[in-house]
Amino acid sequence: MNESPNYIKTLLMPSTKQQMGRRVWSIDLESVWLPFFTATNTMKDTAIPADALGCPIRLAYAKDGSIKFGRNGRPTTRVAKPISQNVSLVRENFVATLKSYAEQVANDHQEDYALQIQLAQEAGKPIAEHDQAEVSKAIQQQIEQAIAQANPPEAEKELVTA
Image (cartoon, rainbow, N blue to C red; front, side, top):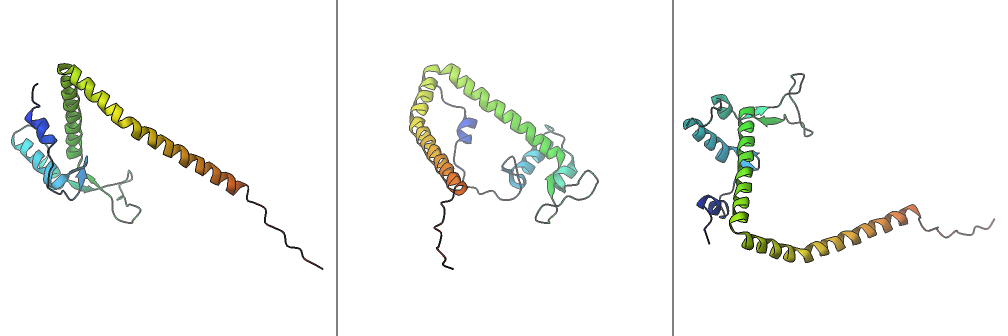
């Protein structure tokens, strides 16, 4: 059996680094995207403007030119367009690479791949059945509560003597 490429193995290794800060595509802007795009600019693989890398977080403006504010009263920010466009490109290429790898493994190791699918489906079946039963119970309880609220029991009437 062939071994997976190192880049696939690396993607599956646990990482101890905690990322903080603004995220783009769930990946930290400051510690991942900015160094990555600075490197790609250095190698002439991208031509992201220096101002986008130097000030990647910008104020968001409404169509009328006014600054947008969030519900909390703070100004809204956005990621500079050249960075967000390149992140989208990386994401699309990443997804294509994952699909290509899965397709290659499925073709090269058809029996093992089919076995993995069968094992996963068998292992997941009781979980899906349990979840379906729980959802059915919860829906039934909601229906019963709605009926009870729509038809409250009549209160006992007090007899009043005149």
